[in-house]
Image (cartoon, rainbow, N blue to C red; front, side):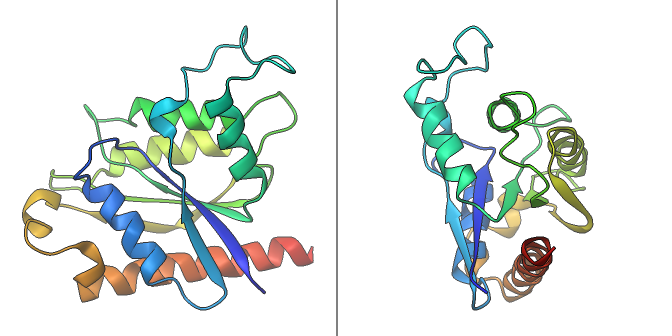
Amino acid sequence: MSVRILALVGSLRAGSTNRQLAEAAAKHAPEGADVVLFEGLADVPFYNEDIDVEGGVPAAAAKLREAASGADAFLLFSPEYNGTIPAVLKNAIDWLSRPYGASAFGGKPVAVVGTAFGQYGGVWAQDEARKAVGIAGGKVLEDVKLSIPGSLTRFAETHPADDAEVAAQLAEVVTHLHSNAGEAAAA
């Protein structure tokens, strides 16, 4: 079964190691799993119920929702900003959780991974992202975790796709998402 996994990256920086991690996940995805990086989170306005009206949803938010509706699973990449989830990732979760009762996450499998410079690899932010996406209706895979510490030094000269240990770990994460998406579709 072919599974489409939408990757959302919580860093907008051009040289983001979390974006590189997402690229590595796409490159090393097992057969049957298609990891697609969403482009355009920077263009999505902050969630505001006043602009989330039928026929008036901002184009960037509509594009995000459309990409999410075609996904079988989600893979979120979260750095850690001041001990918590980056605003851009939280905003994406907010847009996808609405309209009320019609969350784009709607029981679909979600894994949250990431890398950060600190010694814990962004675990606080990733825990916050899991909490938010779970409340938003996603089926959070709590046992699928990958937090890579020391991002700036570990990936200073090596892209995560070329780090054998990281590539294997990402392939395992994507395999779990693929498996869970297949189970959800069969149910």
